[in-house]
Amino acid sequence: MALMVNVHEAKTHFSRLLEQAHAGQEIILAKAGKPYARLLPLAAEPARRQPGRLKGKVTDAFFEPLPEQELDAWEGR
Image 1 (cartoon, rainbow, N blue to C red):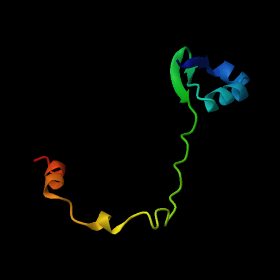
Image 2 (cartoon, one colour; image 1 turned 90 degrees about the vertical axis):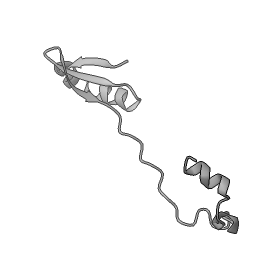
Image 3 (cartoon, rainbow, N blue to C red; image 1 turned 120 degrees about the horizontal axis):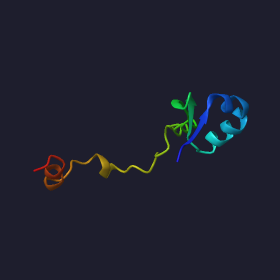
Image 4 (cartoon, one colour; image 1 turned 180 degrees about the vertical axis):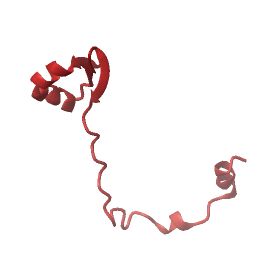
């Protein structure tokens, strides 16, 4: 559930609200009692790709043509 805070209170307790948002709490900033903005944590950065991570784990069978039955399943037949 989101926490609604007016702008004046947000200015006074900004550090506390920032910590709450970082912990996952959604905070709605209100101006004159009406929702105005949303304070949310940043999304985590996706893991970086590492070239060569699967070296030696992909066998030659991976490159063989698929059986007809499997091809039909992929094509919705």
